[in-house]
Each structure stands twice: as structure tokens, then as C-alpha cells.
Amino acid sequence: MSANGKLLDVQHVTVEFHIGGLMGGTLLTAVNDVSFSMESDKPEIFTLAGESGSGKTTLSRLLLRDLDPTRGKVLFEGRDVSTIRNRSKFHEFMKKVQPVFQNPFETFNPLRRVDAYLFDTAMNFGMASNRRDAAKVVDDALRNVGLSLDEVTQRYPHELSGGQIQRVSVARALISKPKLILADEPVSMVDASLRMEIVNLFQKLRDEQKVSVIYITHDLATAYYISDRIGIMLRGYIVESGPVAAVLERPIHPYTQLLKESVPSPTPNKRESWATHIALGTTEVKEYGRVGCKFAGRCPHVMDICRQADPPDIQVGSQTVKCYLYSDQVEKSGAGLPS
Image (cartoon, rainbow, N blue to C red; front, side, top):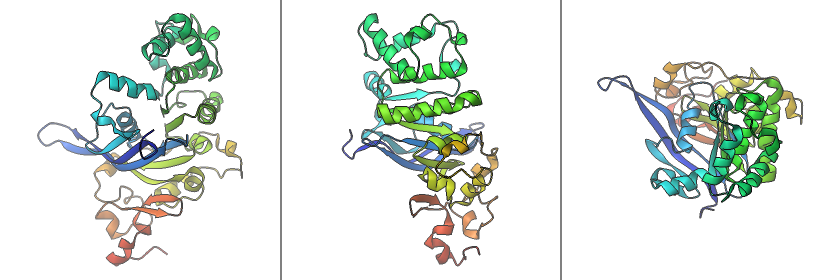
């Protein structure tokens, strides 16, 4: 556990890419001044929801040490992950932070049996010193996701259903006994009938295995159903975050309010009513290059100041919102709140 009690602490992280030629290329800010944290002693499911092009996949690559931030820091158990250069230290980091990817059939070589991957994972992470011990480790992980070693032994990926192979993918991530699972669109390639089975599994892991999960999705239905907290991403920013019920039932950012209009009202106390597939809108790349608020071109409450500078992060009750509607700077600028 880190000294400040945080499992993960993302501090004002920005990721920039140069697009085009070296001469006259365009600078794209894929992740822009993003901050959030997760506590060591409070396992939770924190969702990053965003449409295609919102920056959520870039952020996930950053959290997995696949990218370094242009600015800011990502601390895991108090250590800046960008300073992890030693191979053994990186191995230890990956033991504690495991990914679950979008397409489970891309996780496994179609010409290799599934159980071989699981045994290799147990041995490579030092969870077992021989095949007999590894078999117990692998079977325990599979049973945590509702399968068993007998069910997958000697079977190739194509011999398992989509739901089964994604559960095997989660089991592989559990073998090293991680503290954090980063699940990037884990149900988007799964049939609708199996979607809830997978998201229920993440809740079970949080409650029974005490594993925290970062759930990355464009589907507000599953986000509402399984999350403790949520961050809504737009063009590299988290524009609103807080407890999932507050953000999705009582949104305060104009963008989140727009999203809510496309989602049916949930039955009180029954998150199952959100189980249909609700996707965010299509991307508008030009918004990345816009000065000021990225939503200004579509916002019904846009003011002059919105087009001049990035909005600040404002705490409104249990939610944090990046919007001038809730800032004292609106009054200082002479602009009024919308009626």
C-alpha cells in the first residue's frame, strides 16, 4: 500500500501526438489534464465512458505503461510508473495490473490450446513452480469466473463460445492475483445475451476477490449497471465525474445531459433496466483542435468565455464538472448564466 493510501493516482496527465509530417504536422492532445484516483482499501469499479475518439483507449495504454505521459504523472502504489525501466520491476508491476482486452479471440493464438496460455501465465508470474501446482492455480482462477480446468483443457479458442473465451481471458488476468484490472471494452464483442454475464463477473471480482476495476466503455447501459464511479470523457477531457447514479441520473454538464436524453429512464432501484445497449455518439475530430471547451460547438448554453479558454474543474455536490456554468469566472467575465 502506498503512503497516501492510494492504489492509483493519476495526476494532471496529458498525452500529445504529432500527426502528419515532421514539417507542418498537427499536434493532437489525446488526453488533456486528466486526474483521478482509486483507494487501496476500497475496491471499486471506476468507469471511463466515452465515444470513439474521446481519449479513453489512449488513457488505458498510459495506465498499462504502453505510453508515457507528455505531462503529469501516473502513480501506482505511490510510484511513478514512467520511472519503471528495470525488467523485473516492470514484471512486478504487470503482476499487479492486468488487462482484459476488447476481443478475447485476439488474446489467444488460434493455433495454441487455451490451457497452455494459462499454465504459462502461472509459471511466468511465479505463482507455481511446477505443472501440478500450476494446475491448481489455473483451476482456482477459472472457478472464479464460473469455469474449470476440465472444461478448457486441450481446447482451442474457436472451440469455446464468445462468453467462455472472454471469461477465460478474465481468468488469465486473475492468475497473478492482481490489485487492478483494466478492462477495455470487454463486452463489445460479446453477444447481448452474454453481456450481463461478463459485467456481473466484474462485480463479483470486486466484492469477493477485492480487485479494483477500471472499466472502459462507450456503452452507458453497462456502465450504469456495474460502476461505483464514472468519468465521462470528451476529446481528451473528463468533463464530469462522480458516483455513477449521480452522474447518469442527475447530470450537470451539458454534454452528459445530452447523453442522458438517449438513455431510457431506469426503473427505481433496478439497474437491470439499463441492460439494453446504449452507445455514445460518433466522433467529431475537429473538436480536438477547438480552443476552449470542446463541446462549445454543440452546447445549448455556450458563452463567449467557453471559446476562449479551457473550463476549470468545479466541485458541485458529489460531482466534479469541467464547465463555466458553475464557475465564478463567468461572473468575472460579465457573462450571465442561461435562463
